[in-house]
Image (cartoon, rainbow, N blue to C red; front, top):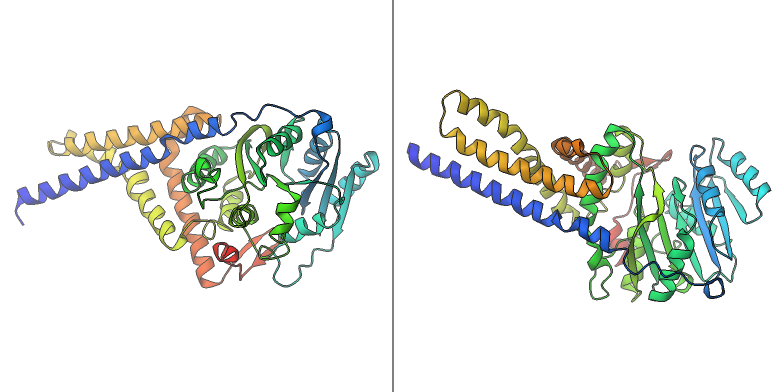
Length: 406
């Protein structure tokens, strides 16, 4: 192969890389707009007389650091008729004592205590949620499932139920506001949310003619009849490690109506506090939670390295070569600078919706590398039967969630 032919091949490869980066950026470009418009027409609140009874259920396992803030924010809801059920799922920390103290102050809080032993085939969270549901008052028309690390603004329940009633939604879920405090949270969480929304576009979730389904377990409001029609969490979903997404799949497959809204004014959550927490948290469901995981996970890892990391390495390399007198390296430098500019601009545009400081957009290659590692770890554990550990439990044979609904 001659020198000129090698040069043409390199130029073609560089052009393909630039076009691929452009396409990748294009696939994320509309996400900030989608997040903004998800909450449109959700501000008309129903009067007290039109609001049905609601049971709010929160599973909690060793949540001493979070449960009081969560419970008190729910008890402070501007809503006329609701109960709060917190399921103490075998906690060994101060969670039980905190709950008993709050329950003594407010009789709207009901504490359900489990011994922590799971029946065969169950995952911990679905079991706790189902046990909580079975103690709920029989006249509740809606059930709100929430996580113990959430904080709910006073108007959250009224806003969500009003939207569900007016929109005839069988499942209404909210994408809550993220509380990001550490370096790793600001670096990693935006990419995680971006990846979820690329795979599960909210506009498709909200379309009845689309099979795409998604819900957020931090704020999951269900019409009671729809929940019971799919067997609740005691049927096909009892072993799910992605209980929110799988409930949305089940509801939609059964002909129910989904509604995913912008919940940044309804609730906030600090999901993880550092790199270790982020890794373990997403590892448990990153593989089974991907659409077509056997294809999408390897493609994501390949794209992350080739399109999300390599351009940042090419810039100093090409600059060094060009300054050293290698004139053809100028083309590589210009392409790489364009690629980096596109990536950082797209990341910053998305980060702004999450109130992430501007400089974190430059950490995009680091977040891509780490999430590639998380996905590979999750895939290997799933395929080899190692399973994952979460909240002190190991799920070695976790069911592939897509198959549970079929």
